[in-house]
Image (cartoon, rainbow, N blue to C red; front, side):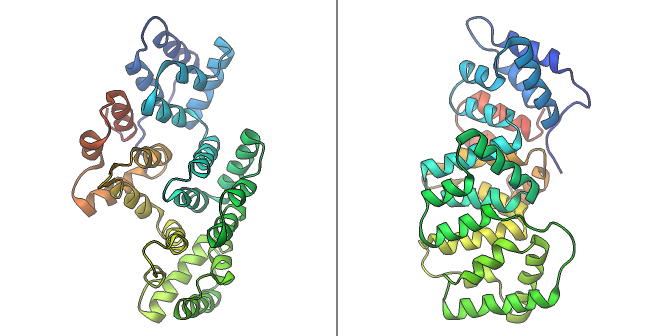
Length: 316
């Protein structure tokens, strides 16, 4: 269930006018920006962006970049983008920065979106950056990570309900043999994880557990620093129970190095219209702290940025 609180009807022309007035003068009325943008759904934001362009001959995102800065500007602009455009931008950023665990963002986008959503992301990526997504993933990665990531972003999974239990058992046995032999680079595990439907894979995961009394992710462990095995585990978690995966991203956002604001905002921004309510519940059940309290107490001192995230979480 979504956490976004948006009116059933809104006027994109009135919203555009409110935002324009908020940007006039010596200062910017950040509260006005939040009151509009944090309470409009995808369709309403798309109409607003078009109305702003028609009325003032300026792209709304470019206007926002001129008016606000820092993490508030980043989150506001990402939220205002269409989902495919936003995911393309997140992927491009992950590839270019090559920060620790960058591959998890690519896996997250490739494995938690539907086949049609992934296709739209690839179209948007190509339009924005004049390269194919597969091309850039391949050129920025290497080795087993490259093989896995290229396979994930290249796929178009079957989204229907038909599954084959005999295939699930067979492929559970194949994965078990790979784990037993520690043959983790075997093409078969990448083939299975990147091409089978998510429903088929969930049956395979359950078959593995029923037959061998353990989970696949527990077997995919060698060195804690092995990024490829970590990427395989991330792929399985994103496919098996994406809401639990996102809750884990939020829990891991606070560590000895500080708080991963980018991870927190990415989850909130991309899931606020989808399943953020369930993610919040899973987060609370695990550590007995609400996500709202975590954001209030740990996110940067930029009050506008913090208030924007809280608004997306449903706090009015």
